[in-house]
Amino acid sequence: MKVKKAIIPAAGLGTRMLPATKSVPKEMLTIVDRPVIQYIVEEAIASGISEILMAISKGKKAIQDHFASDFPNAPYYEQKGKHEVLEKLRGLAGDCEITFVEQEELKGLGDAVYCGKEFAGNDPFAVLLGDAICQSATDRPVLGQLIDVFDQQQSSVVAVQEVPLEKVSRYGIMDGTLIDEGTYRVNQWVEKPSVKAAPSRLAIAARYVFTPEIFHCLENTTVGYGNEIQLTDAMHQLLETQESYAVKFQGTRFDVGNPLDFVKANLHFVSRHEEYGAGFKD
Image (cartoon, rainbow, N blue to C red; front, side, top):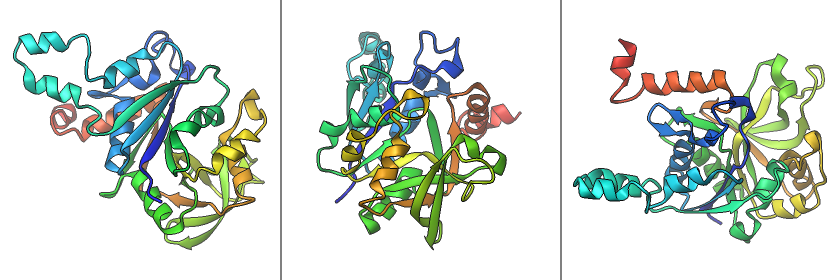
């Protein structure tokens, strides 16, 4: 089975970024010259994804407008003869087909993923969180690194990254067995453990590849931490019937859903930008 579909949960209200997100979706905030969501879609496409479903909430039409081939300013560029700009804007999604579904109630990440049950059908699929940009340290995108392991194992694969010991209580932490360089067989997921109880410092990191069996687990997942349906709880269930793997990916993750890391991401990407990097460094 090849991974050609992806779900991008993008329904959150962005409360950590207020007041900027009062009227602008956090996924549409700009990192240098592109909105956050553009970076995520580009990573998916570069990893071989050809169909994307975005789970959004009310008030996020701007995301749909961004990827639409027909948009309000198109006639202006047409009249001015700026055909190159027009074609670029119409082709932001490349050959990838992007559709949208509205998450009626914000009941957590697990519920957002479950919105894609019909979309995924019986196929494996990727999940890329809409407020995290992952930059690979290799020629293979971070999601692509997970897909490579999926191709070998035909089982669910989760991205993990090492976090400081004092911060393990903020994350879902992996208890796993190293089977290859950077690849682990997962024994269990420990949700927000204390420093003493943490089995490792490897935390879930915003990218996943799932087999369709995850939907059965989500159906049987009750409301958990934060009064929400937690994806990690469904991942616990999945381990009872199917092996899962984790990849300590080569690259950097930017949680652009909070102001400090949003600024850090802008500094990182502008310093490496082909057009603006030299001027920024000056």
